[in-house]
Length: 254
Image (cartoon, rainbow, N blue to C red):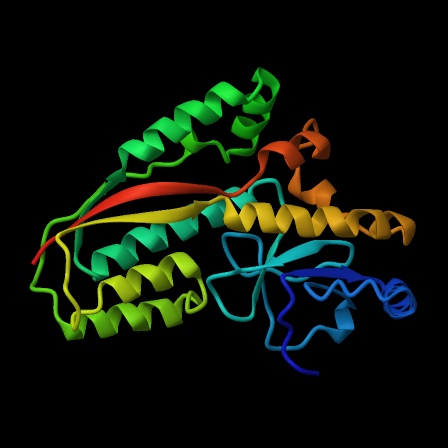
């Protein structure tokens, strides 16, 4: 069997996995980012994790493909989305530093956007966002580094390698920053860029939401039940879990 590339993997009994394949073919649902398998059909090269260390895959559970590691699937819990958002932000900081960044902070534009968002959300929505740990206050968007060496083609190539090692070759935020720090161009000492906050969380939530009705109909594990805290409703999350483009100011060294 070829390597699995779907964003979400659901392990079920052989009977349910066969029923899903029949239903998917019959209805042409084309949920190409979700795969339902029995445990015995999982390729040996797939690694399963509970978010901290490797674990044994279990029937009846949902797993999300780790966007930063190849062939790894992480068990879905209400902490998974927050963890991946933190991981992506930290990778962005490290990547910027490899490209010569010495300081990263919000631009004045983003500070205004944050206040506007807080004013637009109801108290219930803000409470829900905080409970999921995906509110802006749960993240630190500022970073300072010491300038370590002169920036050159060597550092640029190491940054490209960093992208590949962390499966970020196709991430627009990373690609744009890489292109703008090409040492063969005119390098700026201060740079304004956009960062897509909650992009992974939003995409994963919508994927789970689209599959939820079918999973219930086939009496399978529903991804939403794993992703959301027990007292958080999907209707509220649909309104608040959206991608927000934040504007950063990045200062670079030599």
